[in-house]
Image (cartoon, rainbow, N blue to C red; front, side):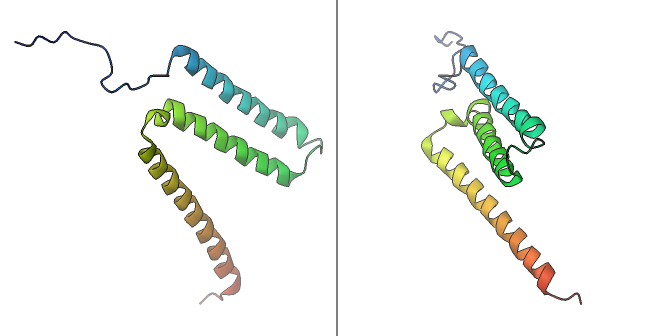
Amino acid sequence: MSDHAPSTEHGHGEHEGLTKKKIWQVFGILLLITVIEFFIALWVLPHGYMSHGVGNFLYIALTLLKAFYIVAYFMHLKYEKLGLQLALTVSFIFIFYFITLMLIEGGYLHLHMPLV
């Protein structure tokens, strides 16, 4: 027979800082970022207060910020070891970089090589 009492604790200190308060805080941050994106899309850009290049840059930056919060808190990457965080981040950066290079090279080849 075992002398261990049943426990509802996580074994390795998982989700230490993820409380209901933190979840609502992250939800509020994501909601605020989304409201800013909608404000830019529905008011600022149509009325000409900002160029489309700056608007696209802001959309990309805000989307990456939202992706960080989703991955860090809701997919629990923030609570993983630094080695795993770096491995996933560096892999993602290389994949994004290679996709960008393929699109650039594909566009170049499409424009400069005759169809056979």
